[in-house]
Picture: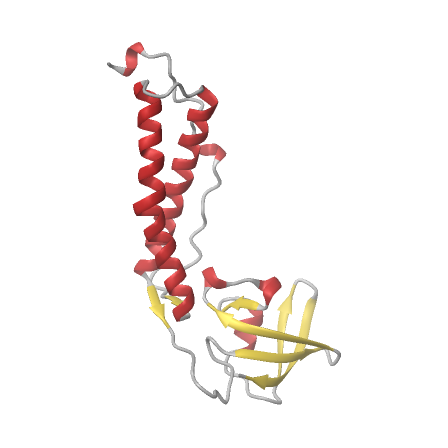
Length: 180
């Protein structure tokens, strides 16, 4: 049956209500990740492409064809979830296409991608950071992105070296006390 004869408009299914997923890398910039992070990102993409998206599409198809008596709200929710999934797939596809796995160096003598660094901030507060890929970052857990101001200040530093970075609270000095 043609959609012209169905009282089902798509104006309630606009993309405006779904936030755009920002692509964090400029043209030609590689997506550096640890081996664990790269595996998680590839697994998520595979799960979405081969499991979640086909399931959502089939559910929408059944609802629209009348095999299921889905309410308009349920159908709208499924369509919204499908659009969110498609956006996430597009984002992950771009990130995986630029993926470059960086294997952490054993016994590093300086702060590098994948290392864990212990610092003393402003001579009194001890913190530990692990420098990881953009999609692996978890600042609350101590995993910071290699493009963050803190990581940029720390990269290349050695034990005993003091580095400075400019954050929202102004300049902060950090002294590297351990690199593992």
